[in-house]
Image (cartoon, rainbow, N blue to C red; front, side):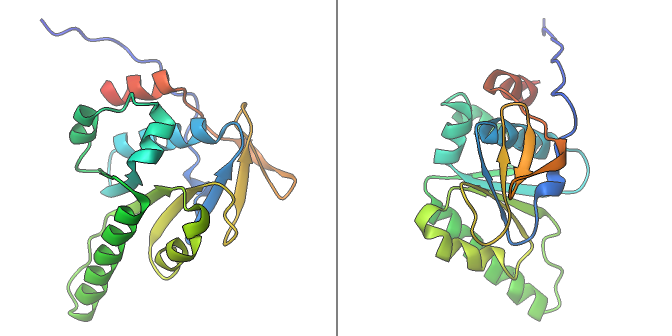
Amino acid sequence: MISVHRVAPIRGAVDVDLIQLGGIGVVGPGANGYMRALLVELLTREGAPLRVIMSRNELNRLFEGGFDDAMTSAFSSRLLVTELLEDAIEHLELALSVSDAEKADRMPADPAATYWIATPGPDDDVVLPLLRGSSLNGVMFGDWQHGPTYVIDTAGVVTNAARTISETVTMATIDEALAHLRA
């Protein structure tokens, strides 16, 4: 017999409108909660195809080991987890060069929106060219000097350059996010 349990909804809608071409930075005590809710939204969203790329470091940061290999496999059509940031960069460089070649041959490129969750740190000089001139949606942990950086507090209130953005963003605890992904 299969047991079915109801999962309490993650409150509110995840604000993907913060994400801009060229990337954004996310910092503050609510950054992990926002990123977990964003990842749940992207992995479970109905409709248009999309892809999320992130390294195991970010996945462990968000789920402290709770997002296991079985779950990674279950979401493999939408989620690519690389071992290192460098592996994600190599994958994206190859994907973008193939996409450019397809455009040159007038072949349709993959219509899937791609979201890249990363912690570039001192490697932002390598990350930036990938985000500029492409349709990648970069969501970076840390200060993003090449675009807006949003500070998210524990209540989900977003500020940028000392001003409050009009709304709060959705947040998810590890347990809430895992429950939604398993449901």
